[in-house]
Image 1 (cartoon, rainbow, N blue to C red):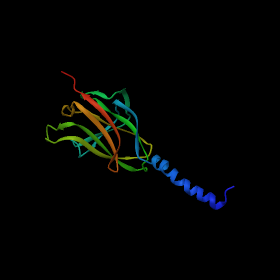
Image 2: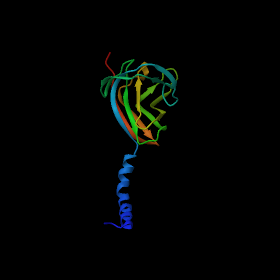
Image 3: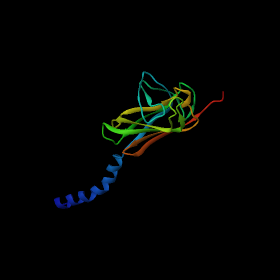
Image 4: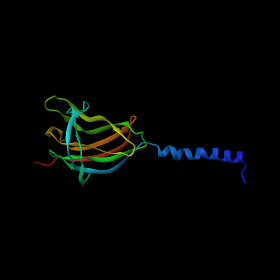
Length: 167
């Protein structure tokens, strides 16, 4: 039988062995639920200064139509992914970064190869992020990626290949 002091000493010695498992469970990460082409419901438009268009659509009632990483670049096509962020406090802010081939707005001349916005998340809460080809200048062939950053570090990423069909 262990004496009380010995039992406490043993427990204290065991704590460092448990700490890495606890710290690992608390590391921010992204769980991707599905990805591909979506139908989206209600849309509102809000400013998004760090983007070529200067705006973004806020959508609701997203529904996966086709699970894929290859997207045909056509007007009206919406693609992206649904995900959960784990290991962050409720109300935390993440950065959503969309990397894409260089796009140039025909009216403003603004040219960029990425867009960024902030989003508030809850630990384990389901979210959607994506892109909709609403104007012809937005359709660019190549790799598109959506990154989720927490405190400046990428914790999740989903990549797509956009293919522009021949006319």
